[in-house]
Length: 56
Image 1 (tube, helix red, strand yellow):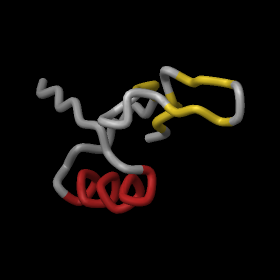
Image 2 (tube, helix red, strand yellow):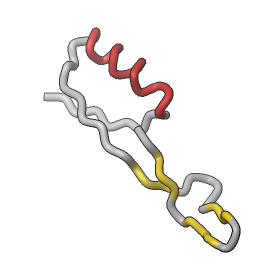
Image 3 (cartoon, one colour):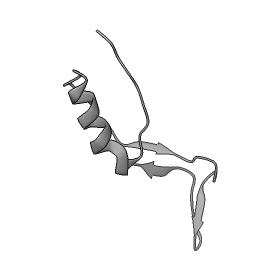
């Protein structure tokens, strides 16, 4: 059994899943991620968000 973990941009997820299926990897688990990346959070008005949703 082989496990590959990758963080993929939402707009590329369908393309990557299709290629994995063609390569013989039919089982895929997807989950939403939280992170702050290089921006280290974001401020909207008086609200500060330290972690931003990263959808995969």
